[in-house]
Image (cartoon, rainbow, N blue to C red; front, side, top):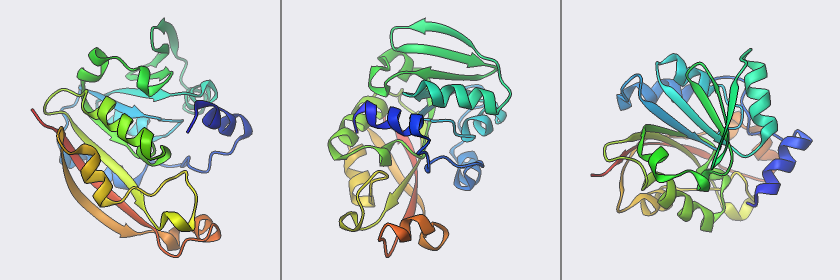
Amino acid sequence: MEAQFWLDRWREGVTGFHQERVTPLLAKYWPGLEVTPGSRVLVPLCGKTLDMVWLAEQGHEVLGVELSPLAVEQFFAANGLTPTMRKTAAGDLYRAGNIEILCGDIFALDAETLAACAGVYDRAALVALPPDMRKRYAAHVYAGLAPGARGLLITLDYDQEMMAGPPFSVGDAEVQALYEGHTQVRQLDRRAMLDKEPKFKERGLTWLDTLVYALERRG
């Protein structure tokens, strides 16, 4: 999607993708990745997710990347944090405690920054992007991580003909193809979610699965 699409959504308050809780699948599966406390964890297209607070509480240095200044402002305000800000080539970088948010384009993230991330958490980035951008995103972000970097990926799988994204359907075959060549992919979970997501029933879906993956950057 074009950047303006997401900027408009935040400006208009159309943010149904935001959850007012920590994602249960993150809390369940992240510890099993054994990402070293103190290491940097990337959260692409982070919005104002509370998952960043949870990751910080696990002892990680969190780096969120978000296009919308409104989302960044709302995150810090909602969590009672007063960030400092400095300009960088990729955008304005805000920091409070061990949470940083870069207000800018994920594709502007430089190789040095990516290589310094030992972990990545993706709940809402891959499924937010149309097919051509998903390929570019996986190649830029995941192929740029240091060998051995680990991540947790959560996607949705449904009949794309029944509903226009975002969020888009990204099934297992596509996940395997996107990361082939640079990242090892292991499916941890697949569960039916439509009964818990009535808004998607209203949009015409008859089935909806959530898929969870452990990722590891190959050497």
